Amino acid sequence: MLLAVGFVGCGSKEEAKSTEVAAPKQVTLRIAHNQTSLENPYQYGLNKFANELERISGGTMKAEVFPGSLGTNESELAMKLTTDSVDMVVTSPGFMSGTGVKEFDLLSLLYIFDSFDNWETVIDGEFGDKMKDIITEKTNNDFKVVGYYSSGVRNYYGKRPIVEPTDAKGLNIRAQGSPVQQAFWKKTGANPISVGWQELYQALNTGTADAAENDMTNMRLQEHHKTPNGKYTSLTAHDYTTRLLLMNGHNFDKYTAEQQAWILEAAKASVIEEREVTYRMLDDSKAKILADGGEINGVNLEAFKAIAIPIQDEYAKKNGLEDLLELTRK
Image 1: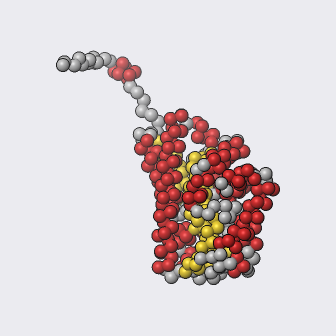
Image 2: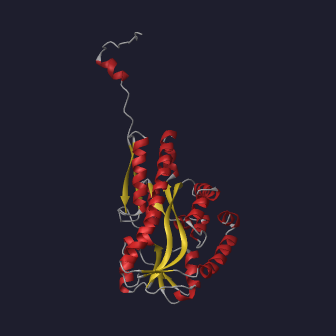
Image 3: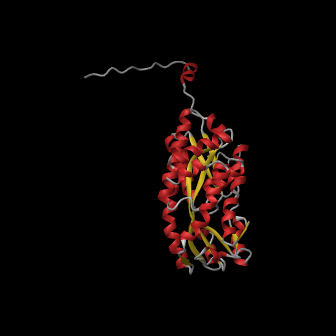
C-alpha cells in the first residue's frame, strides 16, 4: 500500500515564525524542611517530590529542596508560605494550632495512636480528609495540606531510664510546645523545658536538659544518644507523629488544573517514599543506638496511657471536638 505524504512548502520567515509554538514556561517550586541532615526522611520524601514533578510535567515544573537552610524552626518556616519566599514546607500540626486551628492539636495528643498501621488508617481516611478541609476553611485558604508525612514514633530518652511515669519525676525534659503535651509530662512529675532543636545536643551534653523525647532516627542523626543525658531510651511510644506537607492554597489555585494534578500526584509519591524511609530507618537507628553504647528498655505502657486518655477527653470536650476524636478511635 502506498502512503500519501503531504509536504509543507517553504514559506517566508514571517510565515514560519507565525506557526512556531512557544515553549511552555518552566515553573520552579522552592520546598523546604527544618532538618539539616541529608539522611533525614523528609529529605528523601521531598527529593522524590522533585523527581516526580519534573518527570510527570515533562520538565515544565521543577522543585528545589532546601534542607534546614531556609530555617530550622518549623513555625517560622511555615509562615514563609505567606510571603512567597517558599512554596512548600514540612511542619508539625502544632503550628496550625498556633494559628487558631484548634482541631489540629488533636494530632498533638499523646497515645492517640498505638501503631503505624493505626495511624495510617486514620490519617488516610475520613479523619485526615476532614482535617484538610478544616485547615483550608479556617485559614481562608492560606494553607493547604497536600500530604501527610510521618515523623516516626517518639520515645523518651535521658540520663536515666524510665519504666513507670513516676520515674520521670524531677527531670527537666525538652518537650514540644503543645499545651496538651506539656500537661502530660507535668502529670508524670517532669518539668517540660524549651530548647531549640539545634541547641539540644549541647543541652543534653552539659546537663541543661536531663532528657528529651523524639523518634530514634532524629535523635540518632543528631547523636543525642552519645551524650550523657541521652544514653537511655525508654520505649514510651507516646506519639505516632504526623507532619503536614503544606502549600499556600492561593498560590496552588493559580496553577492550571493540569499543573495542580501534577503537584498532587508528586505529593502522593513523596508521601509514600517518606513513610517507607521513616519505617526502614527506625530499625536501622535502633541497631545503631545499641551499637554505639546506648541502652533501650520497655515501659509500662498502660500506666502512661492512663495519664494521656483523660487529657484527650478533656481537650476534645473543651473545644467541641468529640466527634473528631472519636474518628481516631474507630
